[in-house]
Structures are given as structure tokens and as C-alpha cells.
Image 1 (cartoon, rainbow, N blue to C red):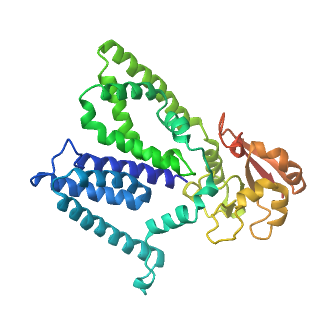
Image 2 (image 1 turned 30 degrees about the horizontal axis):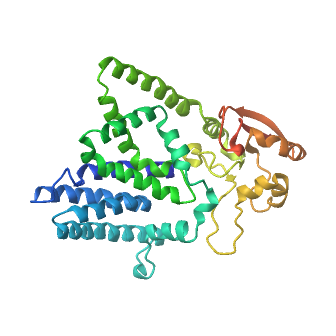
Length: 375
């Protein structure tokens, strides 16, 4: 359920570690031998980050070109980059090919390079567009304000202080990098908060610098209290209460006897955790949302087909899944559209779990409701 967010979080961590060792122009000189070891360490973490999330290459494309142009030792910069990145790519191909093919037979005939597949599917075939198209200013108008919330005033003040002091020369590379990332991602139609995770620590560093520049220690303490007083409640709310119903319902399913329980999930795909929470061999199915990978394929996934006409979908898809199930899970706002049909099928509401006070996705609003089928 959280694999994508976890990969972005790991990408952010690896990126920051790599930046810590990166020879930033104006700060680290690329002369002598001391910088080479740190540069190689940086390249390893950067290459792994790019393997995890190929779009991370945007960061290192910018920094790599900048370093190559500013360095007095261009050969070492280029040769080390090609060697280390090449080794990481070879290792990635070997691991991916082995895992996808499950054997070493005909290894060379079926090579798998996941970053290439990522680029082909999401960029060339534009499959990512199926998961939402946003306006060009989305990151500036929604993404950044949502992520940084009450840090925004400090970020603005920090930027002002940086531009009006000699500190600008030391941090301008990271500032330009952050701007570059936001601009490039803004050009892509599909946008998500997690895409700009790698620059979050860089922007928070600007906020920290702004806080440091406030002369009055009393005001610094007040601002710290304000940040703690706003960030911790938001963290607690989103961690403990917001969207907890999708977790609670699966914990409840886990308490049921596996021998007599079957479950159907009538929600947008991947709304709930799965066997990682249930830990029982309970037959379950959910509405899928696999993207069409071949031209001419129906662009509507199962979830879209279901929400377009719920009762028609249920009538026409009883043969390709377990039906009837002993339990159906759905969000509260769907009930008016399917209640009559579920009544006819012998289903009655048996449990209800609070999920959220608000949600940006209309399909996921309201409580999580369980309908049980009477024997």
C-alpha cells in the first residue's frame, strides 16, 4: 500500500546523503585527491537513488553538468561518473533480470532494465496520464504550500536573507537545483506531492537559515513554539485519525474465521492494506486499476468502470471473481447508489468504521462500511 511513498522517501534520503558528499562548485575545490573519495561515495548513493526512482536523474543531470562546466579536473569528474554509474547499472540489470525471469536460463536474451521500462511506460506511452492531469502551476499553488504549511513564512524570509548576504554564493547551486526540479516537474501533466520529496530537506534548510537570522532570541523561541504547536497536531491527526478506517476494517477482517469468510472491496484500487495486515488465507478481491500497456486497450480500469455504473458492473462481473462474498467493503458515499441492489442480494450493513472528516477524492469520502450477507 505504501510502496510508492516509501520508495520516494528512500529516494529523498539517498539524495541528501549523496549531496552531503557532492563537490558543490564554490564550496569544494576539485583539485588534489581529497575530493575524489567523497565524490565517489556521492556517485554511489546518487546512482542507487536513480535506480530506485529514475526521475531522480533530473537532479544529477543538473548537478553533473554544472560540476563538469565548473571543475578544473573534467576528466576525473567524467571518468568516475561513467565507471561508478556503469557498475550500478550492470548490477541493477543483473538483479532485475534474475528476479523477473526467475532463472539464469537465456539470461542474455531477456535482459530487464527497469529504469528504461519506467521511461517507456510513463513517458513514451503516457500511461501516467491515466492517473490524473494537473495544471502547470500545481506544485507552486498546491504542492509546495501543502508540504511545507507553516514553514512557508520562514522559507520566504530565509530566501530574502540568502539573497542579501554573501551566503548566496554558497547555496546558490542548491537553490537553482530546487528551482530546476520544480520547473521540470511542472512541465509534466501528471503531478504528485511525493515527486518533489528530494528537495524537501533543501527547502527546510532555507527555513532553518531564516530562523537563525532572526536577531531576537525571544522571537526565535516564539517561532519554534509556533512550529511545534502547528506541526505536531497535524502529524498526530494525519497519523492517528485521518483515513484510519481503511486500516481498522482490515484488522477487523483479520479477526474473522478464514474458513467461512470471503471479502470483496468496492473501493478505488489499493484503498486498503491487503494480506500484509490480514495475515490469513482469506479469499479477497478488489477493483483493479492496471494501466493499459497495449495501444487500443480500453483506458477505463475496473475501478472507473465500476463507479461509472456500480450495479451494472456487479451484475456483469459475478463470473470472474468470488460472488457472492460474505463481506463487501465500501465507502459511505457509495451506499445510495448500491443499497437497493445489495438488499436484493441479501446484504445488510453490519459494521461501520470512521475513516476521515474530509477527503479530496470524492470516491473515498465518508466512513468505511461493511455489508454482510445473510446465509
